[in-house]
Length: 499
Image (cartoon, rainbow, N blue to C red):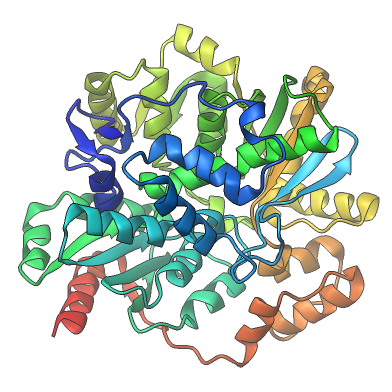
């Protein structure tokens, strides 16, 4: 399959798009011909997660043989990497509400679903492209992507990975996961700044000819493990297709019955994957975009104006503390009729003014499929408490944002309750001990680990072995830099592994 940039009509091979991540013009790669209505229930009925993944990904990556895809998928999705056989199980909370648990991977976050597979896709693409340079994966994280990318790429031959995270923008457990990362090809650095600072710097760096040439002279090329890379995004479509199969299999819906999906999102990749699943034929009714106090997306779905010139807030749901949502550009591309000339102009305007707007007709079409809602930190804690007290289910703050957004919308639009609704649970609750202690009135310990022991004793939720093992693991990475020093840090890392 060929891919094209959201900002031009130049086509590239899928393996080139996988390997390079971001287009040279700064746009994001999308399928030149999207596989619309390419999946039916009959295609996936009774199939395992791995089998569904092979079906879905064959629509995006046609340059790989069926055997090649299956080998990569089986290597990624197994009991070595996931604690459940069904990889992304559905938990029934209410008669018409299910929780899609996406946190059973190695790092207890939904990013594992893509980043367990992506290293195989990237290295296979590198081989097919005949690329001999070492690949340096550059990743900005607001919490979960960093650890999942580090775990996915650690010690993968021919690759190295540099992760940047904001000093005050991740939870203590997320920080511990990254600071204690093993692997000979990894580097982790905190920045004095926020996630948007790191993400925007890396996007500029990817299209900086001078820097790219400098590292190329040393036998190195840049790539990305953020969801700007189509190899990160496409595997996320799989779990929404698998959820559809499981809903029908459980008898929760009929095969032609619409269901809603609520996604807590900051960078827009996770909900875009659900939108892709819908375009491929999954009968998704409404897509509900849940935000925290950084509610730029909620405002867009209400007004049609995307305004990133706004205060940045640090919240209890740090992985959503994002104002400039990279994957929003892909969504806008489809909203605007796949018009790269307009998207280029819109993104240039956004860069200059901090705002962009769709037309009234476009907003009307969007609102037939999408709705946004946001909850603040106090509401998030209240949802965690309410769900636990009512159903005995412990949610992390991001999932609670999704549940809270759904509850708010249901009060305003009770017709949404007529459809079964799936809440995307994006992280294990134990990654956020302080928030849980506050919400459930549990005594905090002197360390995050002591807090988690208290939470486990009260709730009965088992302490995940991957998090428990961190307690006795030494810190490897404790370097903090100003955001202006990121380029220097990257070039120093290149020098270190190319000597």
